Structure formats: structure tokens, C-alpha cells
Image (cartoon, rainbow, N blue to C red; front, side):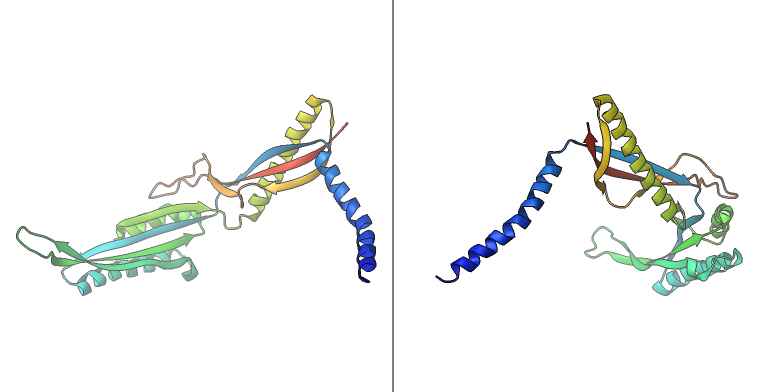
Length: 234
């Protein structure tokens, strides 16, 4: 029974500190506010391209198929070295060897009629004027598969930041318009959230052509979206 006064005293001392925080939170929720979504974009010409290319070779034996693919890839690597593509920008992305099976009427099991070897290489090209020339050259060297061609900006951070600033500015412009139309003033930012995670790259319309094999580099852009809660003042 002697502990009750101590517990009562603790509760009385804690109550005055808890009350202002609760009141402040309630006031924030009750004050007039507006939530708007802003969108921003930023674009620049790409300065790097990634090419996925390779070769597919058939052979009577597994060794013959693999040797044929290896010979072509060796010529491709020599060609890339001639274009001064750095070794760090060339990587084997896929290597496979599979039997070629055929089935005939009356046979219970498919027969192996040969083998196919596939070797895929990913190349980063930092001089975009060489993209078309490289594609044309490796085709002459025996490349017969093209897995993709992507253009990018080596350092996208400045573009991403520009898109974010544009998104926040767009949100503020919308909020100011709504506040003016409603006859109130725009106050401070109460909350700001980036919607959808990291700003994402987007395709742009402009074209850029390279020699030999025509390719369109265009522009590389990023878009960002934010949700902003503004205070409204009378």
C-alpha cells in the first residue's frame, strides 16, 4: 500500500509533459492544409551505349561447335581492342552448349544430330560516334545475334537531382494556384514524399545517327514524382 503515493506522484509529473505533445499533434492535424502531386523531368544526350552481341554456331561435335563460337568471339574481341574499348568495358554475359535433338517416326528417343554453342558479350561503348562502326565491324567478324542496344548517361545523378527539383517546383506551383483560387495563402511545407522510389529513366524522341549500322541515340531522361503537403493560411 505504501507504493501508491509514489505511483500517483509519477503519473502527475508525467501528465503535463505528455499533454503539450498530444495537443500539438492534434493542432497539426486540424490546421488547414492541401496535398498536391508534382512531376518533373530532366533530359540530356547520352554519353554511353551498352551493346549485347554474340554468336551462335552449330557443329557435328560439342568441341567443333564451341571452337567455332570461340573463334568468332576472339575476332570480335580483337576488333573491340582496335576501337580502343577498354577491357573493363567488355564482359562475357552468357556461354552455353546444347545438343541438337531430332526425332523420327518409330524412334522412342530423340537422336543427337549435333551441337549448338552460344557466346554472348556485353560491351560498353563510351564514344557514341563508334557505335554504328562497331556494330558493322563485329557483324563482318561473324557475330550473328544482337541481344540489345541501350543508351545511358554515365553519371545520372545531376539529371536525377534536376528532375526532383522540377517535381517540387511543380508541386509548389499547383499549390499556389489552388490557394489563390481559394482566397488563402500558402504556408510552409508540412510533409514531402517521393512517389514511386528512385526517379526512373524514360525514352526521349530526338534522334542521333551513327555511321555504318544506323542507330538512334536520342536523349536519356529521368522523371520524378513527389507528394507535398502545404499549410494553408488565412
